[in-house]
Length: 97
Image 1 (cartoon, rainbow, N blue to C red):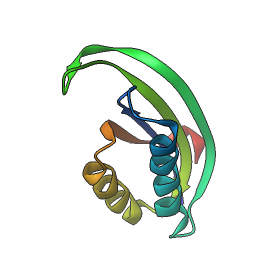
Image 2 (cartoon, rainbow, N blue to C red; image 1 turned 60 degrees about the horizontal axis):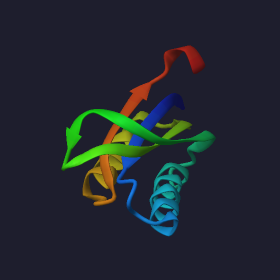
Image 3 (tube, rainbow, N blue to C red; image 1 turned 135 degrees about the horizontal axis):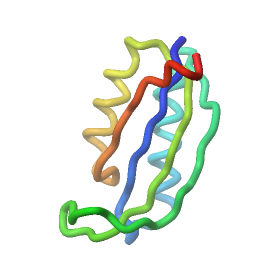
Image 4 (tube, rainbow, N blue to C red; image 1 turned 135 degrees about the vertical axis):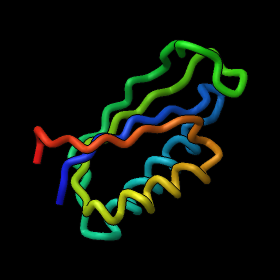
């Protein structure tokens, strides 16, 4: 298993239940293939460098996890079709393997 970092943001206007549902969905995709969630950090509301879908700020979340490299494509697919997630980035962390 390799170490990864996922950073994503949602619109600040969505409710806490929707944010929790997104987080639970990400966790279920990672753990479905024996991956592990190491750390979840809620960064809160941050100003964006440029507007995305008419938003000037977003609610950021950082997730550190270990997973098989083959499962990253599935996680990326799930994040792309989740309407609440406006942008996301998955990075392989070779310093944490």
